[in-house]
Amino acid sequence: METNKWLFRPTTISGLLTLFIAFMGSSQAAVVSPSIDFAVSSQTSTTDLLDFNSGTGILSGTNIAMGDVKGQNTDVNSGAALTCVGCFLEFDAEYVETIDGTLKFAPNVALGLGEIIVHGTLYDGTTQITTGTTPLLSGLFEEASLSVDTFTQGAFSFEIAGGSFSDTKNPDLLNFYGINPGSSFEGGLTILFSADLNGTTLEDGFSSQYISGGSISNTLVAGGGVVVGPPVPIPAAALLFVPAFLGIAAFSSFRRKKTNNNDRNSSFDSSNGALLPA
Image (cartoon, rainbow, N blue to C red; front, top):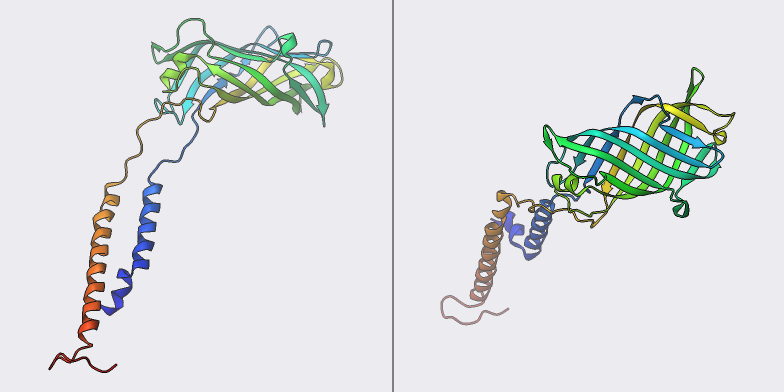
């Protein structure tokens, strides 16, 4: 038993208890912000989908068809994709400056510029999820960048990226994914498209009737009202540590008392009970 004496030392029990508390803490799930993402469909139109007017300095997107909508890391229906019927994206922003060949855009509230809106109706299979005329997404741009991605067969391929904005969503959509209506989101817009320039540079403007794809990525603002589900249960095996530690502590106390009694007894002469010299 001498080789296992370390197990019953108070410092050892304290160390094991610390490990147990750490293990218990690790049973809680990591917090990941829910997101609701919108796909931008590949499309060709007979009218302009994207336009940058160099005279007014306004970048606009009109009747851009949208694809499925999917919630991720949500408390309800996480990963479920909703079919978007008659869904289209509209946005506008004002030109600010060009940095290293990239055009920068921002909102101009005074001119009513900077809005981003997605209209349409969502279905889960054949079940209609959203009703009424409330937009699926409604927000305000913070900034957007536009740059040339490639140059192929006489047409420029552009990318609108870093199109960050804040928004709110249709309450029926939020309810489907278990998120409180009125919750705020922060998102980013990416659109890939081809167009011919009106002049020799991006600043001269362009118009496009072809979009190859893109996305709107949206994340719930911290504390924005996610409906919190039940806590992750502590594994049953972890609960077995409780009686184990209590048993170790009790046995350790017993061992210390027994050792102390033996030390006191060894100080007496067993024949006459007299104290032995130190």
